[in-house]
Image 1: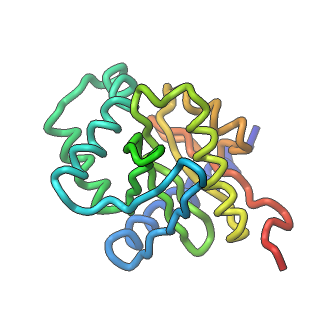
Image 2: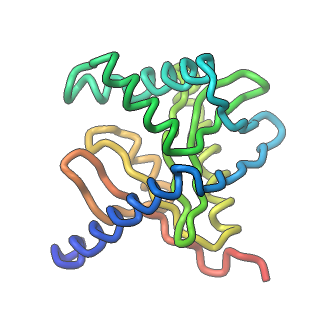
Length: 191
C-alpha cells in the first residue's frame, strides 16, 4: 500500500491531469480513433443528436444507475444534465456488435496517458466476456502509444475486479471514486 504522503502526491497529480483532460476536451482534443475489432466489434464516434444522446444515456442508466441509486437515489433531470455535460467534455464512441449498438466508451489520447472511461454495456450484453474483450482492445491501443491508461469508477461498483484483472492499480481515491492506472508496458512500442 502507498504511504499517505505518496498517496496524496499521486492523488494531486491525478486530479491535476483530470483538469488537463477537461481543458483539452473542451475543443482542443482530438479523440482517439478506436479501430474496429474484427470480426464483430465496431466503434463509431457519437454525433450530437437527440437519438445518440438518448441511446448513450439509456446505456449509462442501465449500467451505472443501480450503483447511483444505491448511494444517492435517482434524479432523472440531474442525471440527464450530468450526462449532457460529459458528452460535451469527452469524445464518446458507440460500441456495436455485428452492427447492433450495445454500449459506449470514451478513449482520449493525452500527452502523458490514455484516459479510458464512460464504458457502459447494455444489460443483455454484460457477463458475456465482451467487456474484457473491449478493454483488452483499448489497452492494446495504449500499448501501441507506449502510454499508461487511467480511469476512475465508483467505490461500490463491482467493475473494479475487471480492471484489476487487467493490470490496473489504485493510485488514488476520492470520497466516491477509485482512481486507477495501468502502467505502460515495457517495450510495448515497436521500434
